[in-house]
Image (cartoon, rainbow, N blue to C red; front, side, top):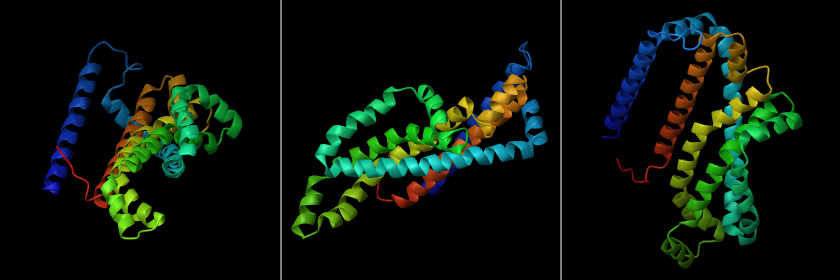
Length: 253
């Protein structure tokens, strides 16, 4: 049944993608100049002609995204665990976590480039800032909403606090953490690309800025197309892994 649903979802995704490409192609048949909206064929040619160039910058951006996700998930999970077991830490850190989302990432990007330089560090830091809140918030909420009866039963059986955390709290909070991770996979590329736009000599964001300055809209769309595919692949890979890991979580459709 799950395999059938997976194929049905893939079929719908392919049909939607084909429909968007068709609408894009129809739009290019109007009087819109090619430098504003290149045709799908022109973008495909740009992809083929610049495969090596785009591949190099794609690898840079992918490294920034994966590094930012790994660090952001680690920091967010540690903070969520700390706030769960320390009311004092929760009172002081939760306002800071919420405030971090009130500050536009565009405003922080120049400062991060100034602090970390034009290398990969600033882009990784941007990705961490973007995904830190959804991971922390989702995991913390999952840890707080553990059924009290499960904890009472664990205490009755003599389970230590560490055993309660490992066998009860973490397992109960994994579905919520999975939701946070899926959201992080969808928004992590935003942080990396913003960092590359502010200051970089590598990455897909740099390619898009450079191509836009040269009015090479086909190359700019090609880089954007790769970024979309990379984000979808990252999200789908993470979704498959989470479905295999969290087999007990109910799914409703």
